[in-house]
Image (tube, rainbow, N blue to C red; front, side, top):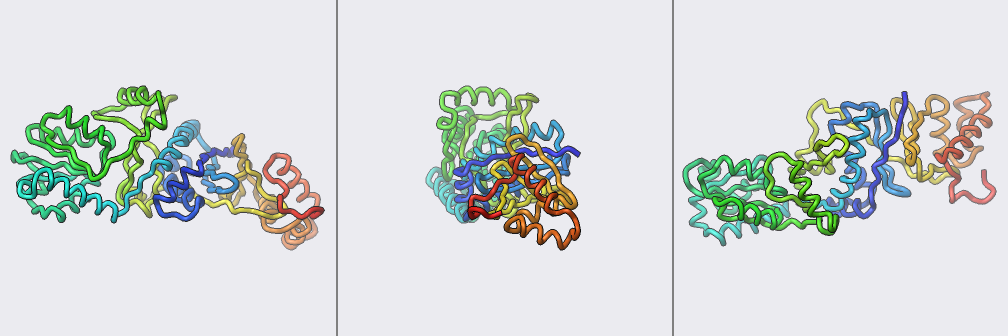
Amino acid sequence: MTYRCYTLPFEKDALLHYGQQLGLATVEQSLHYVAEAIALHPLWQEVPQCLGIVRTTPTPVLAILGTFSAKALGQISLQAPFLNQACRRLRYVTYAEATKTCEQLADQLKTTFGLKALREFQFYGVPRGGLIVLGMLSYMLGLCAEQLNASESGAPVVVVDDCALSGSRFYRVLQQYPQQELVFATLYSHLDLRRAIASRETNVIQCLSGQDLYDHGPETMGANYTTWQTQNQARLAGHRYWLGLPDYICFPWNEPDHLLWNPSAATLEQSWHILPPKVCLKNRPSSGTTTLSIQVQPTVQKWLQPTEHTAFGELNGQVLIGHLPTGETFGLSGKAAEFWRVILQVEGLEGAIAQLSQQYPGDNLRSELTHLIEQLVQQQILQPSVLQPPGRN
């Protein structure tokens, strides 16, 4: 069986921002959260002989070791740049923040139309996040049950959603009410999106949002931003009023789906999610889902330690060791695997021999162990520790 290693390098500032949004204390926690989310992607059902390694020092890396098809490798390489962008732009809205923003949206509705007029409006929550927001709004505005089941009665309909990124979901709702006046009300959306909707749809009388999203496109892409928007408008099916790179808005109940262009296949593919189930209800796996096994690579500060090029973990009783720059990966089993474990646990060659001699009495441990260490150092898998005292074995 041929193993390979694929690296998903993470930039520290992206993980720090991700952690700040989720209230995490360390970069390791942030990387582990992202890894837990990635582990739930359906891809791993097609490539079960894999494991994910979370390594935080000397640089944060998520390494995936295992056997891959060409299709799987293509999907993994497509996701790598997006993951850093998503972590860097993450805007995680807690329940408390969502409630506060919903109050701001309710105030805008009351200021714009008046509470008396709103008693005659109907309301429609866009499934599924919009239903949660509509539930909160119904209490804040004192709506009755009959108002929450919008029909073609002729009364204005307030279309409620938790966020709007391109307006595609609103456009589908619009087709259900072609003759009625509509109000588009979101917790979060970009001003340019709301302006585009208001200018193109004659029966939309108002577009409101509790808070604005920030567009990172101009600073991220510079002069290429307009070209990127035009290209993606042509690639995407359905109707979209506006495309940008807004905050990567997420909620305890929802992480919106995003599409990535795969140039080699000339198709759109769904991006991986970055929120684990413990902070996002939507990302909970269904029963029987095959997930990627995630292991945390320990920090080793012994006489020998893994180099910056190394990621390692255990799969099916084997120690898998990946060389990150080349992707070359090999497995150690039996005695060789035990040698590896002991090398990273004890201090010095004599200590390793002493511990191994209990398990392998009478074997030529010194020459075997020395030979393995020389190979691993030559392959840039292991290196002498900088903490090793001078003259110590």
